[in-house]
Amino acid sequence: MSAQDPTGRPPGGREPTEEEMRAALEEELKRVRVEQVVTEATVSILNVAVLRAGLVPGSEGERDLDQTRMGIEAVRALLPLVEQALGAEQARPIRDALSQLQMAYAQAVQASGADAGGEAPPEQPAEGPGPAQRSGRLWVPGQ
Image (tube, rainbow, N blue to C red; front, side, top):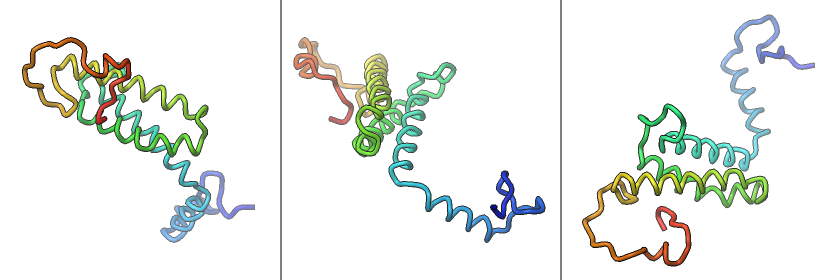
């Protein structure tokens, strides 16, 4: 039987001491795996980036394309680790959400007349489709 009640408090209902809280935290950290933290961080970054893209209803005023781009780059960097930890099939929802976010970001950048760095591009004559469109590959920020 544990020395704590189900709420995590020591017997008697008193607040835990700093030492008891530290010991409980250390025990929790012993159970946590790094891949768990990486996966949770990746999902959190993705959620914040979606919010900063203005894709959550009511978050249009929170739109920040620089933050969105940073979130995309961070998730792209962490995704191989997540796929290694979870397997490609279980990580597919994260990859799909990232793809949708990248497409929304590209559309928002195009609509705002800004480049991937957030600055307005110089005026250039239209010369037809760019290299990504000609190749049929998806444009990815930062590549």
